[in-house]
Length: 269
Image (cartoon, rainbow, N blue to C red; front, side, top):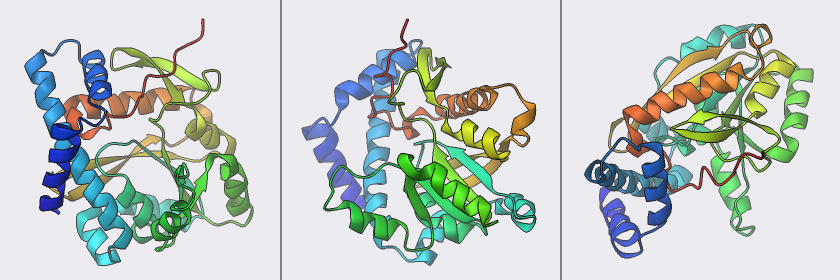
């Protein structure tokens, strides 16, 4: 894996300069207090990590359950056991930070809850069905934005406790159906979906932090974000999520997906 990652780094960063302009623009805007040398060091580390992610993504599609659990381990999964025992579903919020594909594939291996990953279909329609089968081979169900509500309704009606995994740091498509807040020194739109489902069904929300312990190995830790969503003001869950993610990125910025055009959406006046 190290060899293939090194080859990818040489091609993607040194030769092709994959999205280098986007990465540099994002880093400069997010960390105006840092100098050019410090920003360039983060940039180098990010591309090394990005190439590791690409290699891990391929490994994830073919790996055995034992191989995935050796590399990606939830250290306090027992936190969700009481909720499963009483038949209550939960929401798991996180971001495109460190590896996220391992969690999608291993939800059914990590927890007693029925795992549901909310995502987007691949643009390649020929490859999408095969990739979907590989991602869901251990029991995780992947749904897309147009059928999340129907899926959640179905399982709650049939009293099946679910763990709804939502990565809420991608850029929303509609500036009027999101929550705007200051994030990394910029006015930023956040998806409201996780808070919407938490309030609609009164589901506790957990944030899971993914830490890279060594190359190609991760530890995941769950922490409560909001256990009583009906008792807090509107948008407070999204705000708490944004602040938690922001602290994580500031601590180790190279592990976030800087190649994504996160701030392409502008707030309407």
